Length: 437
Ligand code: BGC
Image 1 (cartoon, helix red, strand yellow):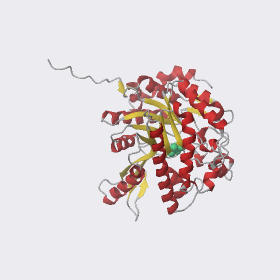
Image 2: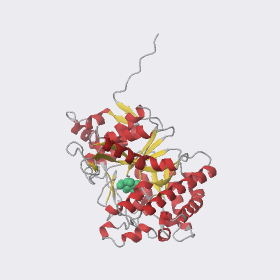
Image 3: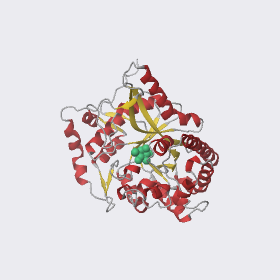
Image 4: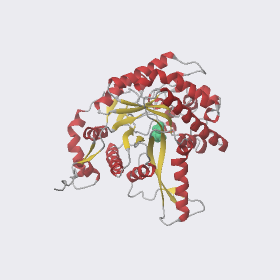
């Protein structure tokens, strides 16, 4: 007798067992009062709207935020520690701040959450920046010394390490568009920074591997973009696509080959290159059919499928960030469902994706753009620090609880008749019940 034919489950788009579901934050963006950091010094010359100040005050309210994580059913969380707090002056480590981070990580563990910890997320202690920041080769040693000091204190409560967040974006914002400290036009500076970040990652990888052989995976969080030519048959546009893909998505991995246990992917952008004038430009070709975020970033779910299938290798992939800045929470619902549907498609076609971290748990300080962009699953009132769960957080929770996307949610993005009502009906009660926390 032949084996029974496998049945397709039409009710649910499933994710693999043990999938990590969570959200990401970074210390500077949510903690507040990081006075010893280069960003803090930089902001003092900017209008008040663009200063981080107390931010979400997570430094004091972390337990509340972790209760929210629990309440929302996340089984994992990505966060970072602030080098400038731990080593505010060269070689002087602040034991009070080390104790603080120990408590923070313990609080996550007490709630049964898998912890992904980023060791560097864009900010530097001011004293490091004053010596040239990542352009200075000595920073690699300083960073390694910091890591060697802090890691033994906290390692028990960390499950996955991210050494660096988005080296490419850091270089782009600091040296190319020059919106971040210490904005500078210097090709040499870019090259040195790239090189030193790659060295820093490699050294820290080695240290973590040798000292903690129990198999806690180590990677970076890399900003990865999907690209396409505007005219399918334009050779020049194809070449520009290939070059951009190599520089943005592959170069850092190439220079750090062999030192990644997983690929961490931050996915936000899709670029189309159009060649009409002399130099091909990145354009958005479909404003009528593709929605954009409040930052004007195109919503292009297909792109996450493309980058996942392109980068798929023999090591696991975690989506370390993916999110949307919007005050229209209905748009965030559609975003989540549509992007996760593409992640599920990629998994189905063989890509080894092990987790998804929405950016971000909370509204937070969006660097040079200040507080206007609202990325959070949870809304923050910056005057009172009150948190309010957004309906989209509950959509995400629903997906997490099913470890898959219920078909009724897929209908919602499919614009089928009655789709608008699906969410409303499904979440009405929960939304009504969501209160200020
Ligand atoms: C960064 C975050 C940032 C987010 C949204 C990522 O590039 O890691 O710090 O807030 O994108 O712009």
